[in-house]
Image 1 (cartoon, one colour):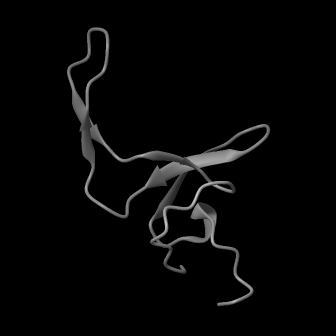
Image 2 (spheres, helix red, strand yellow; image 1 turned 180 degrees about the horizontal axis):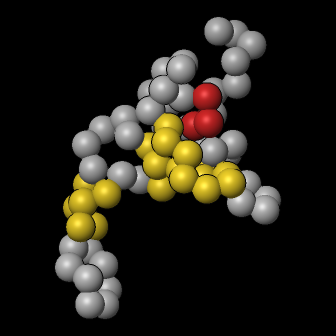
Length: 64
């Protein structure tokens, strides 16, 4: 595993949402969703953290 880059895109818990023009992003499903208050007409919802596929890493990486 020494040659595997430890980024969200390579992690077992990463769920790809969108491939963007400059970078992809997705959701980290390592832990349960957390409550987040939203402004506007929608009530508070639980959601997973949004992460950048090739830049982020939480420290709890597990290879796919």
